[in-house]
Length: 79
Image (cartoon, rainbow, N blue to C red; front, side):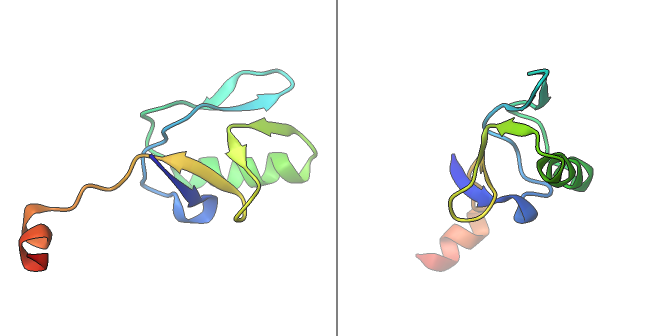
């Protein structure tokens, strides 16, 4: 997994749970594809003062996502 700025996570796959507190129910789970809608919602909840678990505040507002796998063609070009 790698850390990615939240605004650059659209289409990436979450590697961690993201939960609002209260009530503590996950709004993003590992393996879920991150949509623009969920990113906007998380920014809105943050502005409203909710505690958001699973988001890291250093290096901007960041989230753990799965690393992208290079296509074979890209790997061959590098060799």
